[in-house]
Image 1 (cartoon, helix red, strand yellow):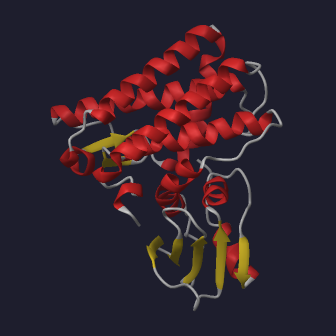
Image 2 (image 1 turned 60 degrees about the vertical axis):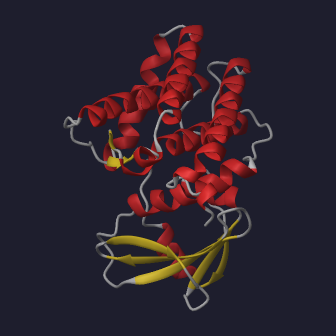
Image 3 (image 1 turned 45 degrees about the horizontal axis):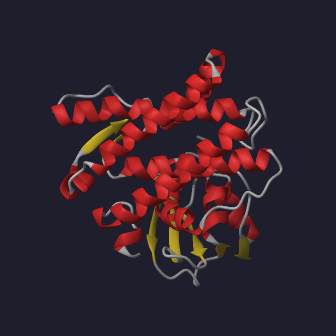
Length: 272
């Protein structure tokens, strides 16, 4: 994994922030020309809801940065199990606001978040722990990556909902591969796992392409780069189909091996 394409490394700053800006601009351009109440591929959300969602999540990061810089304790994280329901409620709360106000507020929140990200030192990128409202403390460099996954996937949602071309850009998909590993790791419910097992994930092409081993135990899921040909099941993806599969938009992938093992793995994850 090249440092320049690994969001956890400050060496990724230029390519990541440039890509985030491009994805955010595409998101707002799409939202501005779309029917405000048009359905999207994000279940039960209209265009106005995905914009409200971006306001909610982005403004929610600011308090975490304020607490981190002040060395103060942030409120406890709510946990990922409640995240989907709360985000749904918050996104819909903007339905009563005028369209122009919502779009302006969304762009303002994005600009403020980018100012924070661009102002991080290399040390802060990796070492400043900022409490996420649902995940808890994570390094500051995670936040521009969170922005990238939201702007990229929700632009896809609007385009897919409108029946238009909805592919992901190569740079965005490549940059999102590492965080989607973490999403699967963080959203696995392994309480019903009785015997450990492992599957392989093969990302074909791109800057973060390669083979990754996912080990499943009753204690959770862990992953690491490494050989997978000895495993009972391997799921192969291009970068975009991997991101969209992990984020619950499609059920992509090519299976090599035991379908029952692959189905056990796919059945572990809850939605966020």
